[in-house]
Amino acid sequence: MQQRRHDDIIYFQFNIFSTHPELIHGVFTRAGGVSPPPYDSLNLALTGLERPENVARNQDLVRRTLDLDRLIWARQVHGARVTLVDNGRAPGGFEADGLATRRTGVGLMVKLADCQGVILYDAEARAVGVIHCGWRGNVRNILGRAVGVMSETLGCDPARLLAGIGPSLGPCCAQFTNFDAEFGPAFAAYRVEPDRVDLWALSRDQLVAAGMRPDHIEIMGLCTRCRTDLFYSYRAARGLTGRFGAVAGLRA
Ligand SMILES: [Zn+2]
Image 1 (cartoon, helix red, strand yellow):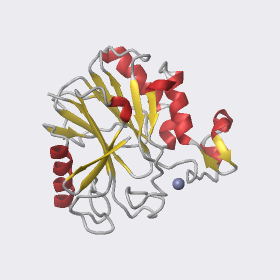
Image 2 (tube, helix red, strand yellow):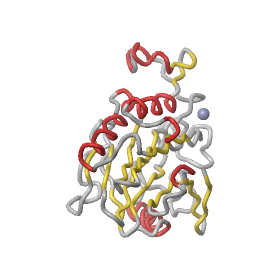
Image 3 (tube, helix red, strand yellow):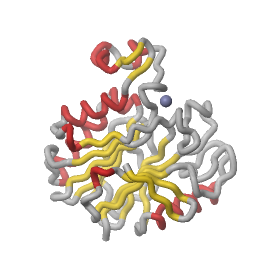
Image 4 (cartoon, rainbow, N blue to C red):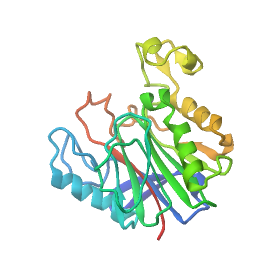
């Protein structure tokens, strides 16, 4: 990955997309926005006591940093729905945890605080997807679903797709005290300690099971709970925190 800076905004980019300048993307940190604590500072979601004007200002900072015409996002519900984005969609006006498009100039955004933001791109099909994947998303295999939707409706080939898996709870901090009830025996291989789960390995394997090549997948490997200096962590803040963004779109 590469760290970028635009004014006070700090964001990361995946190396795996570096040979594709037509793909615009960034995984933003909490730096460079206008929100005061505990949402400091680049909070992209209206949550708790946050002020709508701060969120709107932060979203516009993200949009301008990446030079996109507009941003679109969904109401995230930890489901497995992947929605195609066209001009008829209003930001926040629909429920989905995955977004995909072939339109240019539109930044697909997911909002994160411990869950994985996953970006998918097929250069030949000129199609991009951005997925919000928490542990429920893994259990429901939203990543496999996203590869399927992009293949069936946008002309993508799983063997061509590239993926970046962003900062989220690492195997150090993805603690589940009710593993059997929450995951079950099918996921036993991802249990790295009695109460810890390697969600990054699980996501990689789900993408591979959907037909992707292992060497087409980059895991950033930054744990949100360990790095609250950079990211929002729902668990570290016991819920009282903001959301950072993973954004991708096609250059107009
Ligand atoms: Zn950690």
